[in-house]
Image (tube, rainbow, N blue to C red; front, side):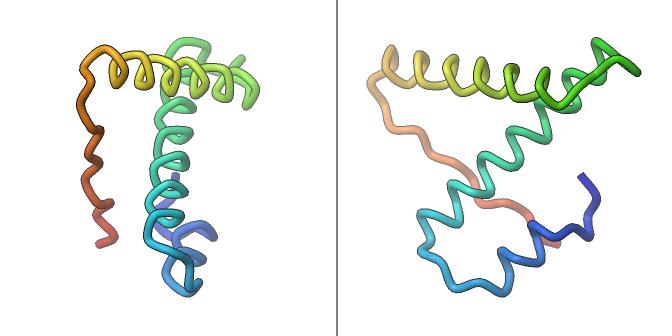
Length: 81
């Protein structure tokens, strides 16, 4: 994802609850990571729907790890520099 993008601009100017802001950032960053993962494997044949499926798998795995550990997931704030 480019540093200067509509999502980051919107997050800076919109007044939304911190929990929603954190969730939006987390999902967007996770989707960006999923897209990078898909492009690494499929290269030019990578499609957005592949990234959405990988995101689903990432989130499912995280949920499983959370349930197994019985601990609270703590996310670090995004570096907006």
